[in-house]
Length: 288
Image (cartoon, rainbow, N blue to C red; front, side, top):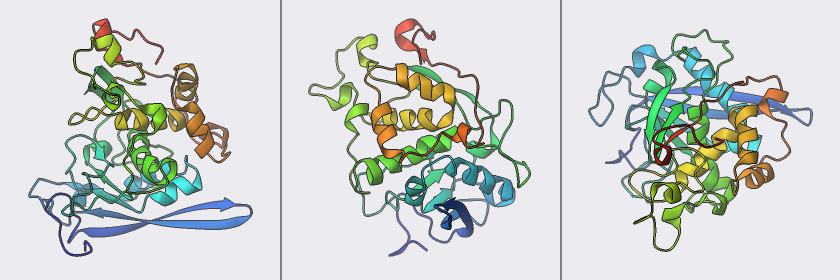
């Protein structure tokens, strides 16, 4: 149940709950963090939209979430307390607050996902400044759905959504602070905003063609994309190092000295599909 009853905007009131235990040995001590995974028990969510989660979710879905979380510092994954899969997001997922509306159950510790994150393969998606490759999983041509419970797959899209929560609780040190980390600010975060700028100037500082939410001109998505780059693969972390003004230093600072996932025996993606930028007639003209 939602504390205080069901909310009018985002809500998990009346949903089914599965518990996911994420474990890691730290300084010779076994640590455990429990996450609630919630989803509609029937064929519709509590907004009335269609949902097939109840009939499709299995241990393979939970494994994908766990594998993704294991790539992160322990402090980061502890920020995530709930994962709601109920198709409320229009795209893959939502992490940010809705301006802390009292009718919204998003609280800086809850991720809201669409089932397509698990049921669809990687694909091109439309961003603010062109198109970008949406990495649902680290394996091309494969979906997270119907995988065995011990599979090694992880989700870069989920890394992106977690990145929103990390901006609040770790970088800003307050789950209610929605400010964009300074290193990720884009034209909309500066005096005068983005109006009247040519495409090339509007894109400055963006690590991917999706660097702003579609409702607001701010770099919240730019931060989440950089967070994804840092933990997605060796190739994308190296791209961050080459991107001038990017958040590499901030990410290294909050990484708490944790070795890279691919250095700890976790998965890697050797290649990377670069964004297709509006300023270059949808060509991959930049280094990232």
